[in-house]
Image (cartoon, rainbow, N blue to C red):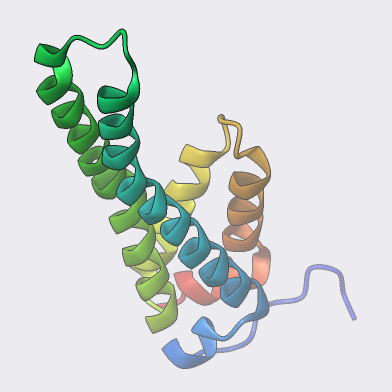
Length: 137
């Protein structure tokens, strides 16, 4: 077997979505979306708890802290949850746009503390077999 053998002739969307690395990337995307969703739910609660329990907090600044918590939650949902869920659904359908969103997520996670996550997503999506399967349309 040659090390750079050609990819499978033509994979259907179902077959593309069931490649091993694609399945592992989908699982990772759903886990990350769930963790970000949990943080988005907890953020307003933690901000509100800090506003009510800290004796040094001015009572007039409590609404600002609550609104700040809601803004953090909204930004986490729009940046951290929805794109990951959309990418996971796209990979599940075997769609090229899901593949591209997953590459984008890997690029965004790589220069952060989530370096292993970003590197795995990039490796999984830019693997020769996966790349050839998604670019053959």
